[in-house]
Amino acid sequence: MAYMRLGDLLIAAGAITEEQLQTALQTQKQSGQRLGDVLIDSGIITQRQLIDALQMQLGVDYIDLTRVSIPVELAKYVPRAIARKYCVVPVKLVKDELYVAMSDPLDFVAQEELKSASRRQIVPMIATRRAVEQAIATLYGNEGTARVIEEMKRAAGDNGRDIVPAQMTGGREDADAAPTIRFVNSLIERAFNERASDIHLEPQDGEMVVRMRIDGLLHKMLTVPANLQNTVISRLKIMGGMNISERKIPQDGRAMVHIHQHELDLRISSMPTIYGEKVVLRLLDKSRRDISKEAIGLTGDDLRKYETLLQNSSGVILIVGPTGSGKSTTMCAMLQELCSEETNIMTLEDPVEYDIPGVSQCQINEKTGMTFAAGLRAILRQDPDIISVGEIRDGETAEIAMRAAITGHLVLSTVHTYDAASTIDRLIDIGVEPYLIASGVRGVISQRLVRKVCPHCREEYRPDPEEFEAVGLPYDPGVRFYRGSGCPMCFGTGYRGRTGVFEILVIDRALRSRITGGATREELKDAIERTGSFKTMEDSCRELVLTGATTVEEARKTITALE
Image (cartoon, rainbow, N blue to C red; front, top):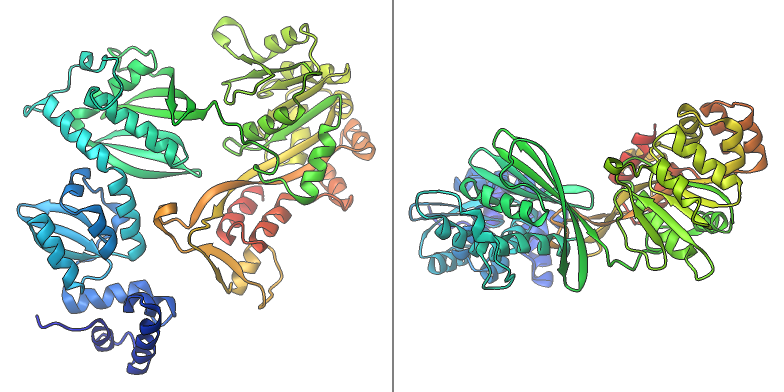
């Protein structure tokens, strides 16, 4: 096929006009961008239109990189520098043909350099630029892991047998250590560097998929050949003090590792599946010291209410929200602020997630009878000033906490409810008398986590009226929202990091009277909203959208969950 320029291709496909092409070419001369990127950024065409035109004119197949698994060993055929220079990524090798996803399949210079570097015939495929950049970040982030996997394969032999578990028991955890040890270490280190909270190792048909939870969402990182999965899982079970010969029942373990002067507490859980054992690792940074009220997202009126609550010397302060809403982190920030030489602070936790200097932290162990209720009774005999209870799960624990608060102790705890008003109902449901709640509870901090717009690809845009409506804001054509365009730093998601969204309820005399009188959730909610000083979580979400901290999409998720 004769060479045809991208502009001519798009004109032939009816995607653009000659005038639009000339305008884009002028912009290209000034910016130095690729023509396709100029056309997309200016809104003349969409990414999808560009792909369709190239497919039709060139006969190049489209590949959705989010739905394919790229073998890590392909990184050796295309150097990282070339992949980034031309925005290309290898996707599969069939005999002597290397299939390569490209954002610009008309870049024949790139194809020639790829052919020279790989010594293979190049078969171009088309993919979105964002998808290619994300795939590059993932593949070459796994480059070191790929070499270790090759070593593991050689150790396993050509017959596909598992590596003998005893091979993993060596003590040297450095470059000379067994490949499986180095593989597991590299996984944990990468998870730490990527700010992941969990690592999932999931056996499937023919392979084991490794995913990491980053900012609340799982991201696929790499795959491990099926014949190596038992070796990797055995290593993890050895680290966690688990039984490596038992593969038919769930097991739990824990281990301590040091990464970049950080002490990580690993909670390891195994679960048998039809393709083998699935293992999940929870990463807890025990040496984390930067948890502050500002770091968790408290500002303005919420911050003032938070500080008011911490000035109490007695009573119960409850932090509420669903699992994964940041309650433990908020409690840690509170304890760090309250800690002093003059106070005796004791905690009951399951598990102990943060190491807080100056605080006596106790681990719950129900097998030995160390429950929240039993531990709380024991703590009351330790002359405490401040007590932190990881979670109120039953009426017994709740009642002890309330009575401790009434007798002059400050008690911090968490409850699984959806908003501040629901918390009172929840306490009554588990058997706490309304008069104890009214006299004991000082305030309720309800919270969620929303993803923040990635600072590396943050861009301003003009929102549609529907976006204003989605978050309950009046339409204003002069207002601009923000979003992330997607980059390697955020795995193409447009988000990096999370922040808290709060509604803080300070219990006043009027509310205490209503609680004692047996008011329903709806009646309490109406009374709270009539105060005029209560800022709902929906209001907090809207503020974050207007300031550009998060997107309409994230705010809408939180608002919808509260309805």
